[in-house]
Image (cartoon, rainbow, N blue to C red; front, top):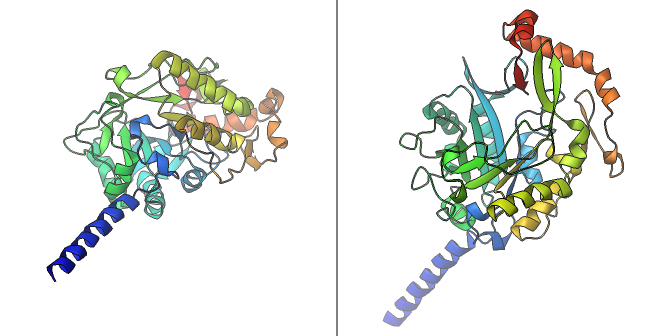
Length: 368
C-alpha cells in the first residue's frame, strides 16, 4: 500500500515536472529558442507600427494584428496626450491620428492571449512626458498588463535577462519599454528604455548604418541594442523641412544585403548583433528580412508567407508580384503627387494653429 502511494506520488511529480517543461517546449516558433536569453535574441520590429494607411505620415501597410501574424515581434509607437486619453500620433495628431493607445493594446492583448508562447516587445515614445501611471491605465483597461514582465530591477545588464522559456512559463511574455518618464517604483512593467537599451541614429537620409550610440543613459557595452534601419528623405514646405519615409529605396533598405550591412557594423563595433531592428514598411520585401533575422537567431526560416507590398508615390499601397516588387518609384512620380502632399501639410499646419506664416517663419524640421 505504501509502495503504491509512493509510486503514485512519484508519477504525480513527474507529470507536474513534464507539464512545467512542456509549457515552454516552443518559444517564438522554435524549441531551441526557449533556452536563449531575451537579451541574446534579435527581433524584427515595425517602426511606428500604428501608422498604417495611405497618408504621407504612414510607416506601415498592415495593422498590428497582421504585423504580429507576419512575425513582427517588436512594436514601436509614438504617443500624445489628448482629452479622451493617450493617442498614437506623429508630430501632430492633426496630420495622423492612429487612435487610442488602449484600443491598440487591446488588439495586441487578443493576439498575445491566442499566442502564449510568443515573446513580444513594445517600445513607447512618450513625446509629452506623461507619467507612467497614465500609460498603466491603458495597459490595464486592455488586459495586457497581466502579460507584462516586471524585472527584478529598473535596469538589467544583458547577462541578467530571463530566457524566452522563463518568460513563456511565467505568462509574462510582453516586454515594455518607454523612452522617457518611466518609474520602476510606480509601474515596474513599463521599463526605462535608455538604461536597458541604446538606440543608434534615426532620421538618417544616407545608408552608412553606423551602429553608433545615439541615445543612451547607461553603460552601452552591457545594454541591449536597437537599430533604426529605416531611410528617410526630406520634403521642404514653407520653410519647414519634413523627414518622410524614402519609399523609393524600400526594396534596397529592407533587403538582406542592407540589413546585414547594418548588423555587420554592430558586430564589428560591439561584437554582437542588435536585439531589435526597426523597419518602415517591413513587408516591402516579403519574407526576406524575416529569413535573415532567423539566421541571426540560429533557427530555420519561417514557413509563413509575408505578402509583399509596394507603396505608391501618393502613399497608397498595392500587392505586388515577385517581379513587380523590383520596380522603383520615380522621383517624377513623387513630384506629381506633391499637390496631395502639400494639402496634407497645410492641414497639419492649420491643425496646429500655426498657419502658413508661422510655418514659414519657424524654419522647423519635423519628422513624420
